[in-house]
Length: 432
Ligand SMILES: [Zn+2]
Figure 1: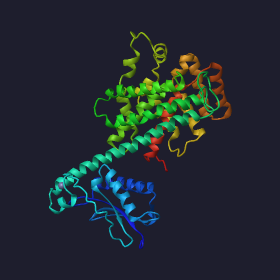
Figure 2 (figure 1 turned 90 degrees about the horizontal axis):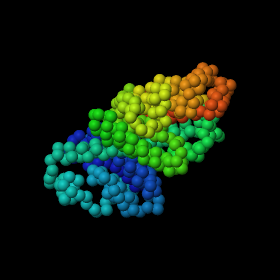
Figure 3 (figure 1 turned 180 degrees about the vertical axis):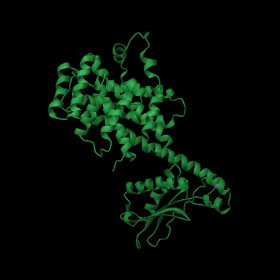
Figure 4 (figure 1 turned 180 degrees about the horizontal axis):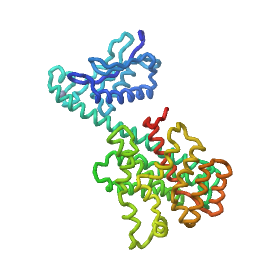
């Protein structure tokens, strides 16, 4: 726009071509960061009149701006700070043009990004470095930067999905036997707030779990289990601290820990989420888990889950993990296929589909196989004919038997998480 200063962004790519897939991806990240830097400094960009092109000179962005209270010199400082604070700022030209389109220079010279010894302009004029050498150096750095940015973005997204899944399951009301917004279900030592506290306490570790998945580089995935458990133990400790020693979320810590790690692993190798690959990673991590950890008859102190396994032969969360989350994918996720937005009704149906097919060790721990069988039967009824009467029958039964299907609740949270990842990945016929 005539009469207004403008800001531009381009890259110093020596030789030709000036753009390729790596350069383009790097430029994309830089452009986003440049715009945030300008806006954060309250520079008024007229983005409707901006242009973004790729031509023989490479990738280029130009945006006019209202100077407002800024002098050109002050705006130039914002550009210079952006270049200086960026880890690859020497590859970047963030420039300012005055009202007449003339480049506004502060007169400072930049160091050559390759030798870091002489001004860039001298090295360029004297052709001090081989273009091919410069290019491969640059592309390597750019590629690494893009991979780091991709990981950082995926960490944020997946952590947010995990938190959303846990909170969605918790907030689903009313639920049979479980803690929800209005009832403690069959629990006397925890309520809705206890779960909010414990969710907040475990969430800071989600990022680390995804990161471990991204950086894991051993072909033997069983070696990932101690890494995941190491983080999981710290999450449990934070959980106990937040809940004054009540076990609210040990199950979901294990299952979501595996899920987040597996997603990190998967997205470190591809941009596309694949159910088969995700399940394969979980299965590989948890190979022979039940036989390795639950059939050890010499163990002195047994957990609730191990006691249940001895009595009933159901492996709980470990068996579910070893199967690559069979209940989640066979019964939970099909209920959410094609659902664009979650709501209470569809989540309750998903919950019943899971509960009707899951041998919930939380129920068995408090009762017996017969009670568990009746519970599953009632869930099946509620699912087949979803009405208030059938729904209340499940809730009343849990109340009278004082049982809580905590294992199925955890699997619902995992189902919601996987649904979010698939939806964000634009698969399975999701339209938005
Ligand atoms: Zn140089």
